[in-house]
Length: 232
Image (cartoon, rainbow, N blue to C red; front, side, top):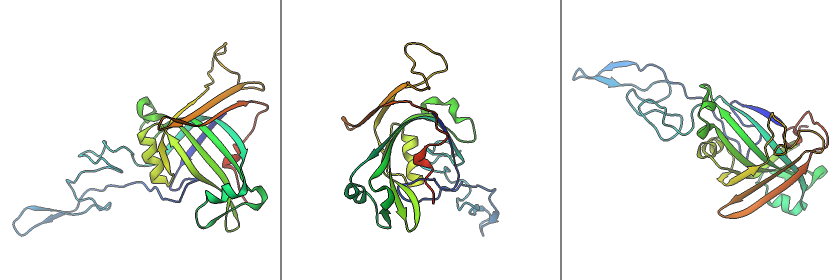
């Protein structure tokens, strides 16, 4: 199953809400000090001319060394997803103040393993060492006042740029080791079919401990990812 997600100012599901607005740099205004030297005036972004630049750390003269470049951010990936149920007490213990469990689906959640490819506005997918990464996350059904939402208490990635982007978005990302069965355009004994009967597996470990694993067998096509489509 392929999933394409566009990220603008806010993420659609977060472990907290955080804006991710692009940084805009304008030409600096010219000013002259009493000694005749040009003074540094702030640009519209608040960065004086000549200072180090970047949407995130590390800053640099050209602003290209930053680990996270400015949005928009684009993602495409393959998902191995597992629906699960836990006790309402366990689900409630994972929610922050302001959220409550959904009484209609108490303890319901999803575990998602995702093989991602990322790009910004400059074909960043042509740098696979930075643009390719894997992710594991848990989503729990919850409510914010009367609105159905999903809450992400745990999420792991294997790429530092993905880790930093997640922190900008409010996700509680940590580093982990995620692997999943892949599908390819060619057929053969090493490729499961993306069709009824196809089998896919995935696992996640962190700090030398295996924390999650799954095996799924495909049954029928789905037009949505249910974990990402909760609404009132």
